Length: 157
Image (cartoon, rainbow, N blue to C red; front, top):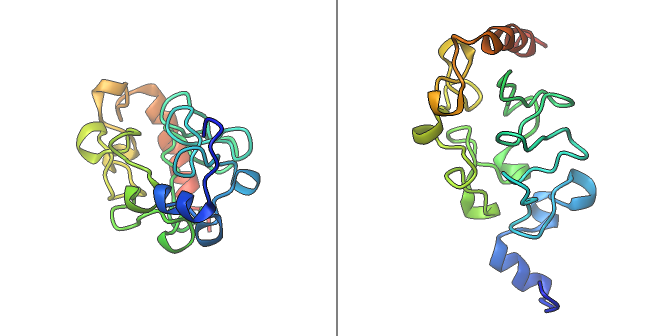
């Protein structure tokens, strides 16, 4: 904050972020609070603690099955809920009204990047991405391998 002090109440009002209400904290969840409670490396995810990588759009399968290859983003399985972590679940996307997470800014956009809500927030066609701009296609070899991983992920009890 460039040497300025700001009270917590003002901080929460400015950024829509509250550790107590939404459970985001740098120490516990690996999120920084510099801008609306998210690390700003690329798409707002820290990869040091929870296995999120920022190489593409903040997903890695190392620990929790989040991966741009596998599409393992599960609302129920990974506890991302509107009530606990202020993620909007109406379209299995993110709401920017509370935590400052804009899916347009961070590349989570149905219209622009081919994400849809039909299956865990991603396009359901062949369990992969179908947007040519970023090289995701259900026809590619990577997606074929990913489909097998997706099936095993979603069939877990």
